Length: 272
Image 1 (cartoon, rainbow, N blue to C red):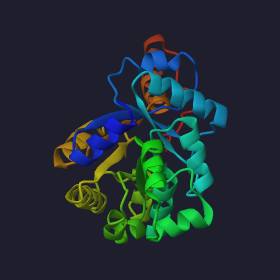
Image 2 (cartoon, one colour):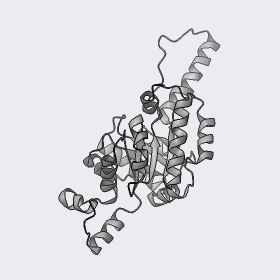
Image 3 (cartoon, rainbow, N blue to C red):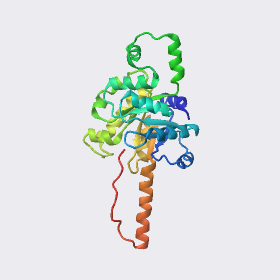
Image 4 (cartoon, one colour):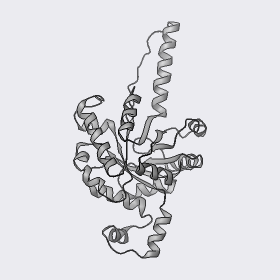
C-alpha cells in the first residue's frame, strides 16, 4: 500500500491495518514485512528517532509497499515538512484541540513547499494560479493529513475539525484521551467507550478515516468491534510492547519452571 492507496481506503471505509514500529534496526523491516500489514506508524513525538533514522525507516518501508505514517513532535510546520522530506505517506499531529492547528496540518501536507504569506493567502481563500495548483496537486499526491484526537477539548471541537477540507483521518490517542476524561487507563469505562463511539460515527459520516491505537492488553476484541462500527485506520500494538509482553511472559514462565524466583524488578506497561 502506498500513500494514494492509504488515502483512498481512509475515505471509502476500507480497513487499513498497521502497527507502531520503534526499532530502526536494519533487520527489522525483514520481520515487519512478513506480518501482513498495510502501513507502519512511526512516532517521533515520544520516541527518540533522529532525521537520518526516520528517513531510513520511511524509505525502507515504502519500498516494501508499507505506507509510512509519521507522528510529529508538535504542530509546527517545520516538523511536518521534516516528516514529508523523510518520505512520510501521512503525517499525524498530536493532541489537536483547535481548527487552526488542523488547517496548519493540511497546509503543510497538501500545499508543500508553500510557506509564509503566499500559503496564508491561499489557505484564506485567495486565488491560486492554475499552473501552481497543478504543481501542488502533483507534488503532494499520496500524503495523508491525520489528526490525533486525545482530549475533551478535541471532542468538543470535533464537528469543526471534521469540516476542515483536506483532513483524511482521525486517530484516537487512547491513553491521553482516557486521562482527559478522568478515567485514566480505564479501557472499559462507559465514558471512554462512548467517546470513541462518537468519534467513529462522526468521522465516518463525513467519509473521513478513523481509528484507535490499540495498545493495551487484550484489546483485539475491542478493535474488532470498533472496526465493525466503522473504524478503518487500525493500528494494533507496537514492536516494543509486543517484546515486553511476550518475552516478559516467557521469562516469568521460565523462572517458575526452573525455580529461579521472582525477578528483582517488574517493569510497568509502556504508554505511547
